[in-house]
Amino acid sequence: MIHKFKHFLLVLIIFGLFSIAVFSLGSKTSESEPTTVQLGLIKGPTGIGALHIVKKPEFNSKTIMVQLLPSVDAVTAKILTQELDFAVLPVNVAAKLYNSGVDYPALAVIGNGMVQILTSNADIRTFADLVGKSIYVAGQGATPEYLLRTIARFYNIPVYAQNESKPDGITMIFSMPYPEMAASLAAGKIETAVLPEPFATVARLNNNSLREPFSIAADWTKATGQKDYPMTVLVVKGSLVRQYPSLVSQFMKYYKQSMDAVIANPSEAGTLAEELGFGLKAGIVKASIPKSNYVFIPASDAKPQITALLNIFLKEVPDSIGGKLPDNTFYCAVK
Image 1 (cartoon, rainbow, N blue to C red):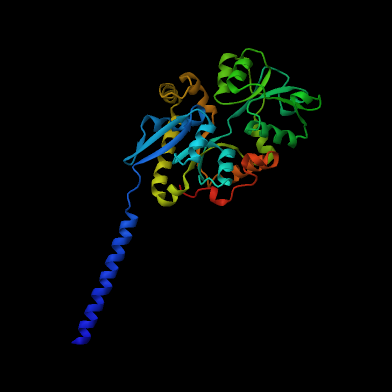
Image 2 (spheres, rainbow, N blue to C red):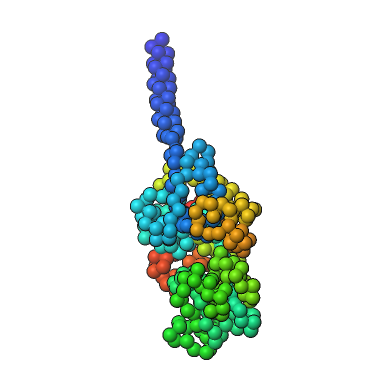
């Protein structure tokens, strides 16, 4: 009888401990997810893929507080203070922040190569035809410059700055921002320029004699073996993705839905961009989307392409990505 009582008591104790454990575990795992998340977008073309998020900033009973910011520096400042849960950044800036100890890994590539070369010179048909000529490139130290330098190196063509121009190579001029360059190209004030979308579309809509003599993307593939080059990524606060991976996965799906809707209906996207304050005219957005190479590729799937581009920055300007390639934890595995 005593033995049976002891056995019964032991069972009660074990059951009680198990109940406490289950209750504790349940309390931990059922900890409520945040009801609001912060998304930082750069006002302009890089944020276009999120238009439908801005229009309807909610998913799965969560509210998205969207901040349309004027520049990469403005987004970076808010990341450094951890005000943002998600943000859009150029690939090299995201890598530099991560290498500096800022815990915002890459979630997805949201913009692949959208850089075009436009010219009014009928003699330019291939990259080699740029020898002895000047081309305008905006954003010294940014992706377009290093794309051109990589391709030129592949073809054994020297590249010179404006003050050291020589006839055996290509001269790059960095004196204009994108809007001014597009306007000057359209007005015939400059002959050849490298522009991303939507500025290439702006120039062509205002001067139908401008043409794209060859594909920079195709020459990039020849030079690197990579099909494409990523330009912008969606990043996430590291603590958020570790604590609430399901929420992050849901947000990614919602972002992809927005991107898919933008690509499928450029006309609607153009209207939204103008109405929602992205600083772009509806007609320009509509015309540029088919050429803009908007995508949504999980970072873990795009690692080879990201690494190929970052290797170029590492070779040319190591400081621009923090002096090294980011480790594998930079490529968030959540999908």
